[in-house]
Length: 449
Image 1 (tube, rainbow, N blue to C red):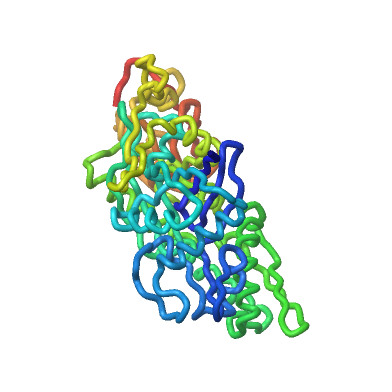
Image 2: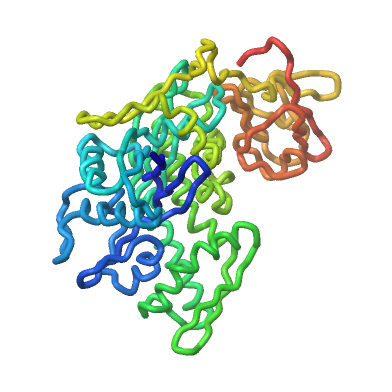
């Protein structure tokens, strides 16, 4: 019997088999009089028919009623979408299915999914939590791991606990940080650019508004690598153009980066943990302009390799609980080698490139949570200091978070490898310099922080 994998997490469904991912389908449904359009086709018309369009039925899978004569509940839309997926796969006979489940799903939602799947050609043989799958596809170290699932109307942050087992920890939602929220914000920024530059408001007309939303993804991709882009829209036979800068795009995204950072730091505090945060994310998020730069410096983005993720599902299939009347969901797997060697699959190690001292001339100064003094104004200081002609007594701070060193509150003149610091991580070999005074960061063996 054929075996397929369906990933319900993020803002689109991914469908794959042993050969790789076959296709993706957006979480969109458009209801007509007696028909339903699904996926990308429905998304491309959502602004044309806003009252007949739905995009949160997977995210909020439930029997919540919808105001439409041919579909009663969100779960009806999900059922129609499952049938659509089986048609795209051209299934003729019942086929086995493994399901990657969004971390926020409760037992009722899992039971609803299993209920509708029984009325399709999919035979659900196992379900596994999305955060556990994210952890399977990465080699962990001793950090605080979190999986971020960007959905339509929210983001879901899930702690991934890694020891001898890989298991799902605390799950929390970040409202208003979904892809739809982000697109709505960017649509307003882009609309302002068109109004100010050519007196054209694309959101005053359904056709031009739909055209705007259809192009946002391509414009984001362009501005991720270019300082500016010329955006064009067509309406009533006329072409309109507006210029948008990468800086404007980053300004619009900054509030979402800040919300995510604040939430993750709060999540880490709740479990009384001060380790650096490793954030598993989809490539869509990590490729956003300046995502790495505007998250808190203790957060390291780690993009999930989707092909490796799929392979890990098949390689650990025997560890996924079989579905039965109890609607079993796999929320942990062993990290002991499944071949029976007794060895741990992943080893947890400490970073070897974290500095312990700053070398000035032939003298090494400890840099364990220190302020960098201006020796010209504070000649009596016995701690790490550099000489500058500026008027600041303190040039910046060096702060350890877990086992990693970060630059904090550096004045603009204090450079890291001849570049202005952005509260970034510092590693062995980095050079701090200001007004001709410099220090090289080094690691001294057998020194712990």
